[in-house]
Length: 121
Image 1 (cartoon, rainbow, N blue to C red):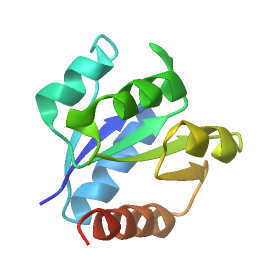
Image 2: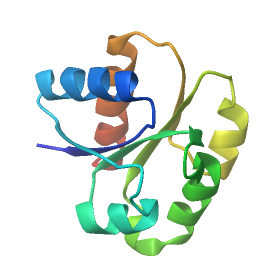
Image 3: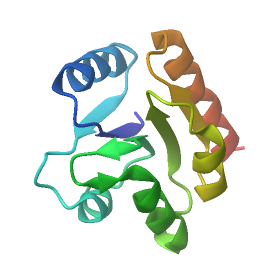
């Protein structure tokens, strides 16, 4: 079962994502407000990171750049999300995919499944 790490600071969105992803058979781990994001990624060893661009602890794009500089994390699928269309900036920083909020649940599930399939092919 793939593990998805949720870096989302909106509690309502986080609850919806956890429910949706669990129903789809994914294991989910949510980052807490006090977690050091990079430390949590090392600790949890996720297959997928669903990363919001705007986090209480900082900029998700900056975290993405840190992830992509680390060879231990190069197999992790990173899907960025935001209420603004920042797809170009996120892809340039190394995102595998980008979703504009709000999005349909099927869009997220498809992005995860196709991204994991591409990583393992």
